[in-house]
Amino acid sequence: GQQVMQIPQYQHVQEGEDFTTYCNSSTTLSNIQWYKQRPGGHPVFLIQLVKSGEVKKQKRLTFQFGEAKKNSSLHITATQTTDVGTYFCAGGAGGTSYGKLTFGQGTILTVHP
Amino acid sequence: EAGVAQSPRYKIIEKRQSVAFWCNPISGHATLYWYQQILGQGPKLLIQFQNNGVVDDSQLPKDRFSAERLKGVDSTLKIQPAKLEDSAVYLCASSTSPQGFSKNIQYFGAGTRLSVL
Image (cartoon, rainbow over all chains, first blue to last red; front, side):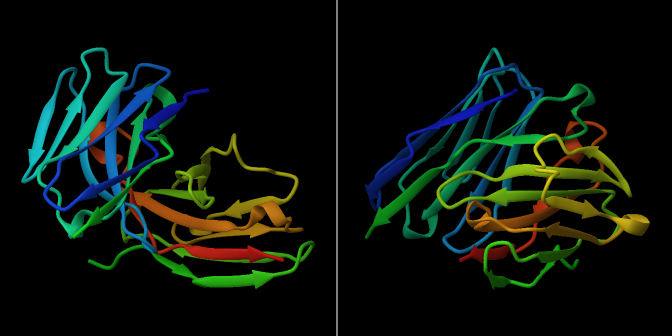
């Protein structure tokens, strides 16, 4: 079955430093979504990427979808303490999968003030 | 707009006991998902409903887990009997429709944290 891997598993940064997490799928994806889960909270949707090579920005967050639609990245510029949490990518297989998402294991981000 | 409602928030049971979780999705959302999230891992899909029909239950341990969505609105997930390895957070999510990329954005409830002793 489809597998989605994320690296790194943990990232500790000083406030103001940049952060990047990478996501790789074993199969070609129809779309990829990113979610953020605060400590003790539930996953909250951040963004969806659909097109090959797509790049989207949300303030300090930049999301990329690879040309082959098998990998993606999330980059945060100048991290803040409010960025703390676990960032998950979730791959959609499309076709007859009826919207099913396969989540990566997440990257836990800690920001030291 | 009200979010996805789940109850209870926490549950502690002993192994071999049974437990049930309840989920009420966002009004009008046709698709409902149950996920299991073990500490330190990403959510793992257990079962997906489209209205009151099952679309995907390939990862549901059917010897002990069951789920239903009667009337196509709220849903219950049951575990009977529970095992130690079932300790996890059970998340319910809903989306408007699986048809097309733009409509499978999932909205999660707060989850039920299950501890099996």
